[in-house]
Image 1 (cartoon, rainbow, N blue to C red):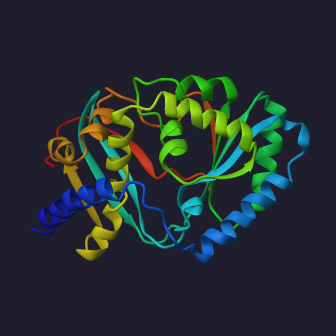
Image 2: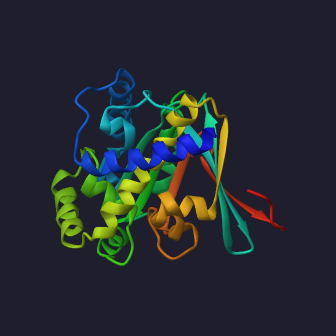
Length: 261
């Protein structure tokens, strides 16, 4: 019964996200403010010869909502290559992390090591996710209109705060606009709707919820297609991702037999 109520509210949230797609948050949480200060301190601590062309903060810190909502640990279940279920565990303890992207001319090992060391020294009590993307690769994926690439969606539809390279960032934003497709917006609406699941789980006193592939498809057809390998909506595969602490919120689970979901 609780699952049915949550399912119905997700459908309503999807409509709300469609109507309020470009609505911006008017207030900035104290955690967002502190996170941004820390991100600036981190970038300013790096040597100038790293060839970082663009550096920016995105996610809840850039939106001003860091620390104001719950999150989930997600598990995606497969039998061999077939997507069968999507599970959400309410994470009541997770701190709101800082999401940062560096776009670099040269991703040499010594330069990456310098960045990793600076991250570890500064981010001891605050979780951070840093994606480092090659400049040519960034241009390539933003130009790929066949998939709802995360980098293009972040640049087009979400608040970002540039730490460096505003001029180059604006060039990427123009490229993103030129290659924008309807699927970009629809994927973003589904993704934002999925982000409302933790608050709904709290409302209905649920520690976990699992959707069969068929149930998941009814609300999230594009996210379902991504789970099935038909589209790709994440950041570039060829990137360096650094998480502190090194804990992923999404896990792929391979099953040897069919479970009842």
